[in-house]
Amino acid sequence: MNRTNQENAVSVKALEKRFGSFVAVNKISLDVKRGEIFGFLGPNGAGKSTTIRMLCGILTPDGGSGTVGGLDVCTQSEEIKRNIGYMSQKFSLYEDLTVEENIDFYSGIYQIPAHKKRERKEWAISMAGLEKHRHTRTGFLAGGWKQRLSLGCAILHEPPALFLDEPTSGVDPISRRRFWDLISDLARNNITIFVTTHYMDEAEYCDRIALIYRGEMIALGAPRTLKTEQSGNHFFEVTCRNPMAAVEAVQDLPGVKEAAVFGTTFHLATDSPATADRVLGLLRQQGFSEAAMEKVAPTLEDVFVSLIEDYDRSHQAQIEVSQ
Ligand SMILES: Nc1ncnc2c1ncn2[C@@H]1O[C@H](COP(=O)(O)OP(=O)(O)O)[C@@H](O)[C@H]1O
Ligand SMILES: [Mg+2]
View 1 (tube, rainbow, N blue to C red):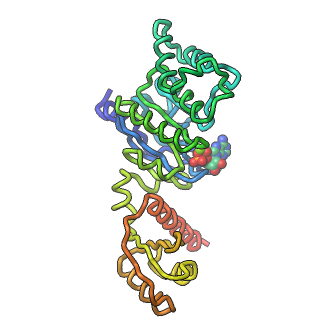
View 2: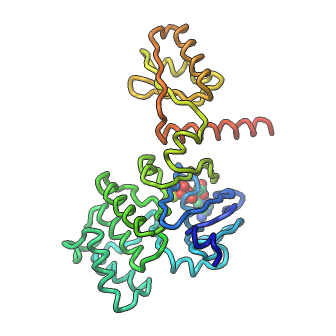
View 3: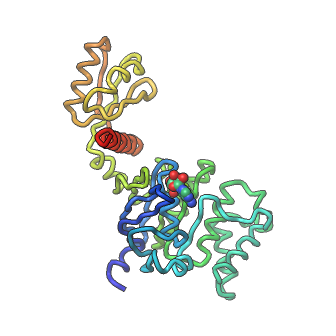
């Protein structure tokens, strides 16, 4: 095994998936290190599930190449499936089986050796906090418990890498927090985590995140780096009366990337500090004489919204040129 494979749990280049003429995943390249929590963020339909399915050996890529745990994503899908943990968007538990019966079922699927079955079952039950519910039918469990049981089942065979597709959607905030604590524990034990989400706050739990939009990766980096460097935009909070009217007055000015009402103020993203000064001057001329502006550190959501708007603008421009 070469050095790259030992260091990277996932390494793919120009990965592509088409459905007919529609390109769902467009030449995505990424490396994920052992023990890293790698977040894959993007709106619905961006291509997150399709990418994760290619990494898990469920879908065959139409282009590109790569490895997961040193195994080839194009030719060794069966080996990959046995060597990873995967939790799909809909947790695949049997609702009419009890908690223990679900675990026993997955023990069978993953061919856990007989002498380890008991220990792994107890581990999964205690990790999920289900000691009092081992004989409860799964269908009666609340969402957070089902989710943790599902996680336990996905890692019964102690895989070195775990792929989670929107594991927290539809789960209450406290359970989400608890779930992320479990994920952090796993990563501390050197398990690689590849997780998709559309919750921006969850991105903060990741070591690195990739933003995917319309099948393309449009940003990649640590959350803090993305906030400070990636977008190249400058962010301001503007205080004035009637922020809605103010947004309308400035949103189409050159250099304005984004203007959106935010409570009693509005948030502004510009291509440069000079543009922001011009916006403030113009507002004051147009009757917002008391308008005041403060530079702010962007949230990840601010950064992603402006990156997506940049993407849409440049692609719209390309369409107009080609027409
Ligand atoms: N089996 C399929 N056949 C046709 N189109 C598909 C199929 N699976 C996904 N798609 C399309 O590919 C795009 C990306 O889907 P998906 O990867 O599920 O996005 P996400 O998980 O980010 O919401 C969507 O437009 C979806 O409709
Ligand atoms: Mg999905």
